[in-house]
Image (cartoon, rainbow, N blue to C red; front, side, top):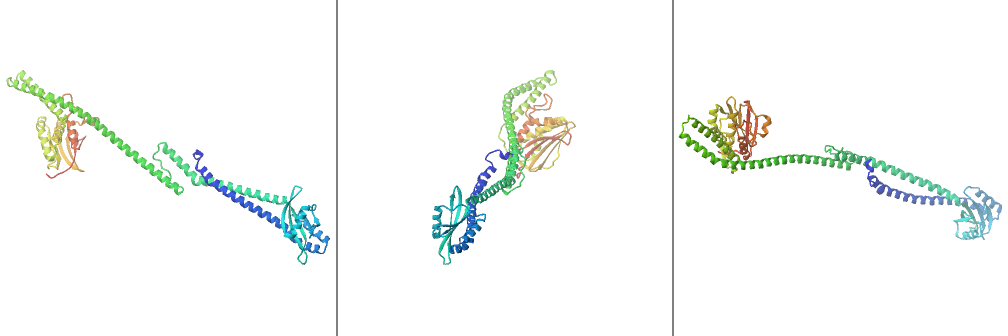
Length: 487
C-alpha cells in the first residue's frame, strides 16, 4: 500500500501521539489499580486471620481465666485445622507460652512482641522463620473483669499472600495486555476505515492526475473533512482545465497575431520596394509615351511604323497601370475619413469600370435601388478597392453577368460582387489576397488588385472573403463595421 511509503505516516502518528500515550495512561491507571487491589487482597487475607482469632477469643479467654489448659489446646487445634492458619499460640499475662498448635513455638524476640501486644492491643506483623515469611496476628485475652490475662497469636504463611497476590497481578497484567491489544486493533481498524481508505483513494486519484489525466475527478464521500478536500481538489482541477483551455486559446491568438505581424512586416517591405521601383519607372515611362505620341503625329496610323508606335503606347499604358498599382500597394498615406453614403461609393466605382464593361460586353447589375446607409469612410480608398473587385469580376465573367449588392446585418455592412465565371479553386482561396499572387495567365495580371483592396478594407477595420456565387462563379465580400451617422 502507498500508505506505508513513509515511516512517518498518519497511522504512525496516531500510534505515537494517540495510542501510546493512551496505553501509558491505561498502564499507569492499571498499575495503580493493581497496587490498590493487591493491598485490598492482602488486607482481606489479614482480616481472615483476624476472624479466626476472634472466633476462638472468648473460649480461650474463659479457659485461661480458669486455667483449663486442655480446653485451650482444643481451641488452638480447631483453629489450626483451618487451611489459612499456619500456627496458633496462647501466652499468659507475663508473656509465657501456655499452649501451641502448629510449628515450634516463637522465639524469645516474638515473646517480647507478645508481651508488647498485651499492652498495645491487637496488631499484625510479618516475621521470617528460617527463610519462610510468616504473618502473625496478636489479640489480647481478657477475663470476666476485662483485665488482660493473656495473648493469642495466630500465624499464616507469607507464601499464601505472595501466591494470591501473584495470581491477582498476573490476571491484571493479562487484562491490561488484552486491553492494549484491543485498543491497537481498534486504532488500526478505525484508522483504515475512517482515514486510510480515503487517503488511499486520494493517492490513486493524484497519481492519475500526475499522469496527465486532467479530466479525472475524485468521488466526494467519507467524513466531512475528506468531502471538503475532494471538492476543493475537483474545483482546483476544473480551474486548471479552464486555465489550460484559455492559455491554449491565447496561444493560438498570439500565434495568429504573430503570423499577421510577420505578414504585415513583409508587406511593408514589399510595399516600400514596390513604391520605390514604381517611382523610378514613372518618369521614363512618361517620356516613352510622350515620344511615341509625337512620332505618331508625323506617321500614318495605318503604316507599319504607326502600328508599332500604337503598340508601344499600349504597352506603356499597361506598364503605367502596373506602376499605379505598385504605388497604390506601397502607399501609406493617413486615412481621410468622412461620412459618405454607400450609394455614392458604388456609383463612383461603377463609373471607373463602365468603359471596360462596355468593351468586354458585360452588364453590371446593381441589386439595390436605395442609397444605402451613411457611414464614415475614406471613399477614395474604398472606391479603389471596390473598383478592383469589379475589374476582376469583368475579367472572370463568362456570359456577361456581374451583380453588385449590399446589405446590413449585425452592425456590419456587406458589399458583394458576384460573377458568372469559372470560380476560384478552394486551394487558392487562402492565398488570394497575398501580394503578387494571381490565377491569371502571364501578362494578364500583377496579383496586386485584390491585395490593394484587402489593404484598404483592413484600414477600415473590415474583412474580405471569397465565397461561391449564386451565378456559378465567385463572390467577393467586403465586410465593414457599420457606424452610421446622419447625412
